[in-house]
Length: 88
Image (cartoon, rainbow, N blue to C red; front, side, top):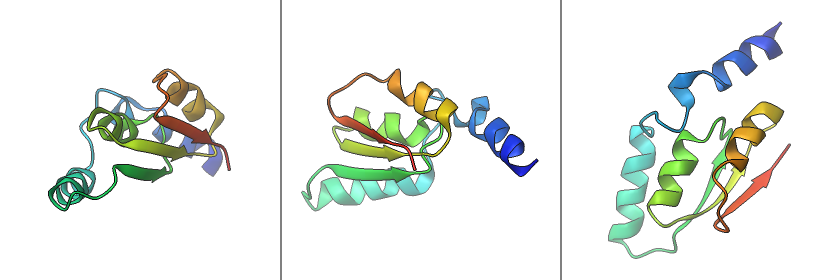
């Protein structure tokens, strides 16, 4: 089913904590810091947290959203007060 395939992709190592953040995420962080904007981000479809982890490491407060229960469990491992999780 498509749900099973999506779960497999979401939980694959390509999206894990050790994976590199998306280029667009890195570019956005650079621009936000350059313009001295508030370090707040929403990661929609956060998966295992590749970009969420990067954003947190750069000092951002992050709202991570994902409907996948397995992804939520992975994100909870980050354990920081700068992270809020939402299931939708």
